[in-house]
Structure formats: structure tokens, C-alpha cells
Image 1 (cartoon, rainbow, N blue to C red):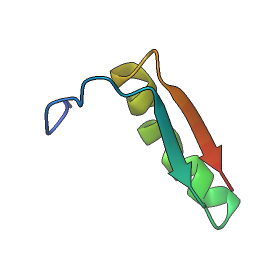
Image 2: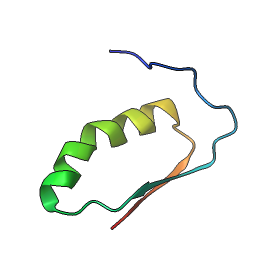
Image 3: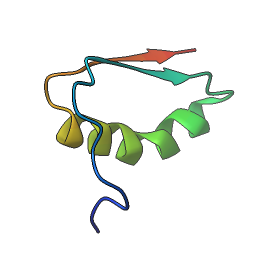
Length: 48
């Protein structure tokens, strides 16, 4: 499974906003791993 669009150059910070329940966090984990793989130098914050 690859990226569906090209990466945005120069991304330094990414915010993932507001999961409602613990299950939302669990389902978001693959997306967070994909973000980390795509943007290894970016600061990723998960806001709850």
C-alpha cells in the first residue's frame, strides 16, 4: 500500500487532532506510523 499523493516538501510539524475514545487512538495508529514513515524529520503531536 503506497501513498496516494505526492509528499509535501518542507513539512516540519504535523498535528493530529482530537480522538474521542481509546478505540479512535488504536485505529489511528497505522496512520500515525505512515506519517512517521513519510515525514521522518517532522515533529508529530497527537492532541486529545
